[in-house]
Length: 172
Length: 231
Image 1 (cartoon, rainbow over the protein chains, first blue to last red):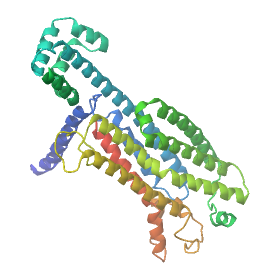
Image 2: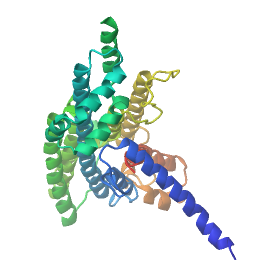
Image 3: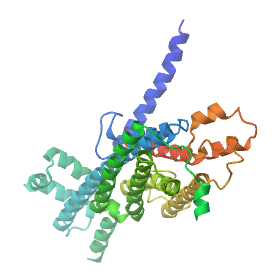
């Protein structure tokens, strides 16, 4: 009695797991976060279906259909180019923002020997000031969001900058 | 040159208003594509730095435009046989030129995106810079890029051989050149493959579909990579 239900249930569970894994991957890698799998990144997949349709006809309609298919493919290639450009711009903005904030903190707490402690003390001292307010006004980010970003920014920061500042400290 | 042109006639001439209308619409669309591709490659900084996209993407749109233009001219007017052969040869050149950019441009976009955001892609572990890997990622990237270029070159050579019939004559094809072998799809393969005597013609028929088939699989793979980038 239970056999059909089991047969139905097993693949559905595995599919759910795979979907969940893909979703986790997407939240890590894509910068502009999308809620479902029906997002603009599937456009190129639809476009390459046009290339597939191109091959399936006999010689009467082959040229006509191949031209239509290639035009379809090119249209979605254009959409993809725009999408990738938006993604790269967003990531570059975020990187430059992180670098700016890091520079500010290093200059402020440069006298102390340990860089990490100076970084943390800088954070604590500036959280009460209007500094966060200023950044949020400049970069159009909410203040609580900024706090979270700044707490995690030392893990994301450029390693070369960190090493350069450490060298400077050791020389002093 | 004249004998070369006479050897490559365009056997199947499209007639009727449906061909004229569709080809003229496609020509206008491909003109828009060419204009848009030029503006994209000039304005966007990431594509301007990459020479492959900057050269090949406008070339792809240009060949698309020329191909549609040739087909539209052939469908519209009754030409003399000499002009007809010139047009058909130029059409074949354009059709074979379109294959390498269609393979290389999406791959380059994928490569730029994944290196810039440091996400793993196609045997390149880009997110682990600090770990010791036996072959460094930079060398691996150069290797993968050149492999794709070699594949594109090979497919292009196969496409040229098929378009200009270096492998077979019309005599070896039983219908005596009634059908353009380079214009046959899978439907022809399924319907015709058992009916003929020699196996060589079937081999040519399948060989003519190999470049497009490879292109199709690569583009599906890349599209899945792009899709997985998000969901």
